[in-house]
Length: 330
Image (cartoon, rainbow, N blue to C red; front, side, top):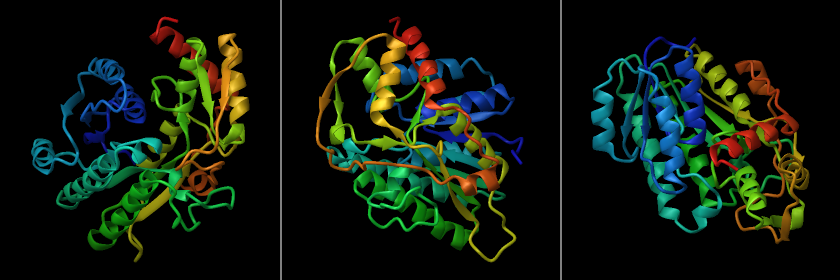
């Protein structure tokens, strides 16, 4: 079960990190948050999220780079009661990994290594939860994507770093018996979302009468997952750490998706309907690093984490548009 001790959340000013932390704080938990507030996207959005979190007295924030070993160790030593980590900090984005690959090695490989080492040396450490991605399925053609599938064909550096995180964690769970859970997120969207994600990009383009870039000429399908469902999945993971009572390493990996693959063009039409404006579509070929379809097999998550997504895009998109209009005063 969730411990009463403070929980360390990395990437706390990010979309999922913020949403999870807000949920935990509202339910009385103490959260120590870390984020480097980098400028990969609009920093003012990250600061607005933090402003909401700072309203809670049981929240403490540190601006730090997770790959900075000395600074992370200093913060860790100040909070000896932390025995649970939800590690969500990462350099996100498939396309940006084609432009700035070293940012992914620093944040996603070195940063993950630092987190593993902190957990390894904390006596009584209970559970590490970390963000993986549906991108690890890469060139796989079998659908739905199952955690039992081999993931040896990444089509982007971002995907390769997330698979590396899973392998590194497996080795630490084997060597040091660190209970660990990896969560493969499938196209998360919703209020306070990331501006580089589809729903945000499309909404902004339609509002400002700019064309939407639609890759693979619109023949794309995604397992769009609403943020509230993702948070339920993470809390389910917090409540169900892998068992130490077997000879196997205490490391489990789960899909968190909506278990429904939606046509990208239908997604766009829903946004158009909520905004009352037609999109200008610019049809383009499949972009390097992208996959044409994603779909999560969530059977293991349902069984082990009591995970049950309940928000279809017909409900999730209106909620996002409502937030977008309010936040940007449209």
